[in-house]
Length: 333
Image 1 (cartoon, rainbow, N blue to C red):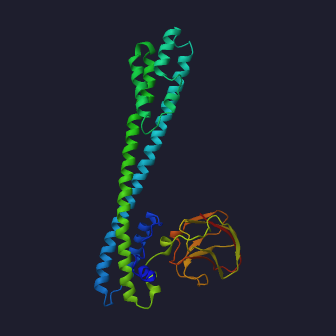
Image 2: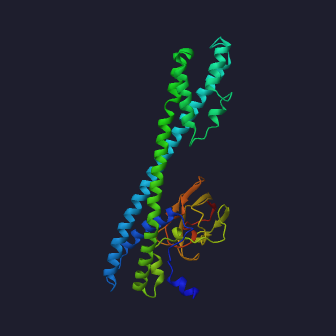
Image 3: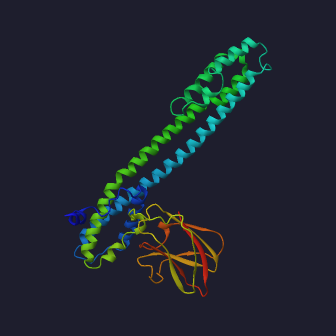
């Protein structure tokens, strides 16, 4: 019964796959389906309808990822601005604390002590620096500003102006960050809401294409790029450094990516020789495919996303199509 349950279960649902890989994999699948849509099959009408749905979902996925990217960019900028504003405020509070400790600013010791205790109720800057950003910082900066303004006559216009300039903007900047965080959350929710529909459409397309191809299921697999759909397995190639040579007009497997769901990029350095061509193929012994990624000659490390390497297989192979031996270093991350 277990085999039947597996047979009728979703082929594409995978709780361990990243949401980004699910969407990116679907967008890539939509391109492949549109470019290679069977038109002479008895199933052509169904495949045509499936393609229309797939393209519409792909557009939604692209828009969702774009919006998420924009939201994250805005959030990052807002976070940087918040940190800068908070640091500016802290520095002003520290400088003022040092000023009120000395007798150059206010000679009267009693008055100086009163103002110090008013602005630094715990006896130092810790009241402000230890405040929690989410719930306390803006309010405590607001308290400091309000108390400074209330004692304008005693503290003087210059002192008050510096506090207004350097603490005043924080609440607005922090509110902008909170709004940006909220928008990013909404964008992440929109992306998550697409996952189930994308997986279901992939299952539907898989079954339709399998019926069309019948015995040539390898042809069906080419409609998906395997790197997006790697299942988690107990393997650990990430970080493993390869040092190898490849003879002229020969090729060697760099990595078997089966189960490598946590690795996303390759760093390759040609120590001598080159260039070298990369491809993701079904078998480590596969000949040079027509579509490859060329790594140019030179000692500069070449970094590439695995998803950008041509091919649909899980064997990452390097091809030396030159007339002399080459040597390379490579590792996954």
